[in-house]
Image (cartoon, rainbow, N blue to C red; front, side):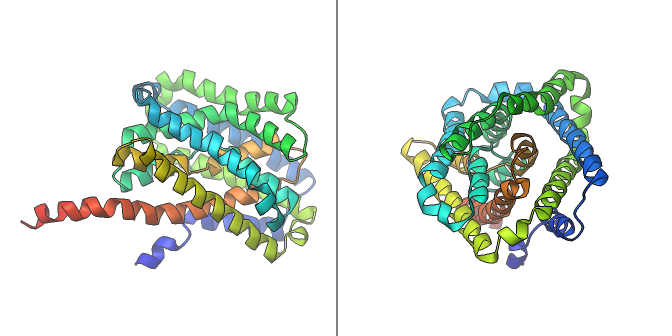
Length: 330
């Protein structure tokens, strides 16, 4: 039974199938153009629905716990980028330059929403604060991530972020998100009642981007440039980043005097990186780069963080369950 918890979920299996399909049957020519148009439309719809789903009241209500939210944001947008830049001399030799550019992009991404809240709930943490912190991270990431990517690309010798890229971010991601927020008063209830539909759009847009990105990368010789030792090096890089983030959020929150429930929220919200936001953003921000190399680190990190945090959440919950046990046996 415990072994099943370490097996990949259905979406991860779908990602693997998509990568294999793109490797064997990459889209090209007219088909690639059609897939690119479909991908752009799916991404715009995704951010529109996220805007319509996000409750402004919940965010405003949760902002009173400002120390916790600042701690989560500092971990997401300060600690991770610093780790990516400072550890580059040690970690970059394990992978190719393009893959490490993808690692730097991973470090600039916002936190996840669904899994951060789910793991906080499983570990008996502060769920309202997790909802607010994860939602704020996702929303602010639309602005902060492109700026961080530009700064880190300069430090990586890749040049800064162009105004065209920022304009595309605004048009393709921010405008639909704001439109969703405006439309929330009319469709917000319907969207929240049909969360399954949002999950399909969420996952479908990611699969479309992954297929088009890996198709282009395969045609450019992705797998010839990424042997197994390099993939092993990427695994090590991801594990190191996640381990340092988990340690920093756990012991940092204790040093700052947070209660156990708040510590749990900080750990699970501050150590995550969003695949749902990362893959669409990569398509916009890295138009002139090998996109398959850019999204590969976040795809691998996604699965590692899910497996690791599932174990950690159960360990956090165990003492509370043990204390509650006598009351249930009387």
